[in-house]
Image (tube, rainbow, N blue to C red; front, side):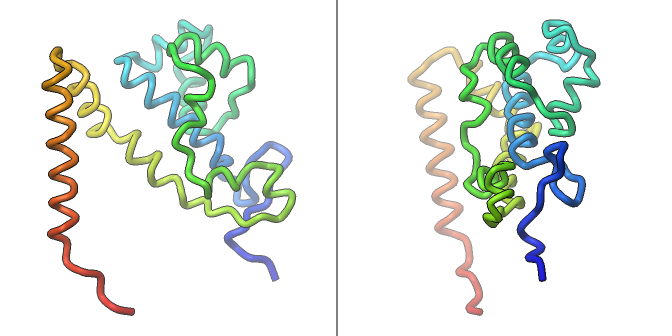
Length: 163
């Protein structure tokens, strides 16, 4: 009997159900995040890399894996270290590496919710607007306000129903 939460890996790096490996999807989401934060279109990024915008789309969705040399080029064009593409990876996503899957370790592939929130247009527009604030002290106060509002909302939430 197989545990449906333990995806196997195909020779192409996809999970057994044909979906992109969660790590590839995370890296692609980080490419999209940085590109969008820079206000760069997929077409412009593709031109800078010698690719079509369709290829950039496939990378960003995780449909196509990004090789080491391409990741290096992306880090240069997007002006971030290569490690940026792996930052903020949920442990469940990290557990979906081909090596971990081949060892039979459980991977919670649903752990991409944090990445999805970061890639939402609303989040990206908020971050862009934040960095357009020219005064660093004002930015800091906006940041503190956002944290205070989030904490106040947490305090107002009704308690979870007992199970």
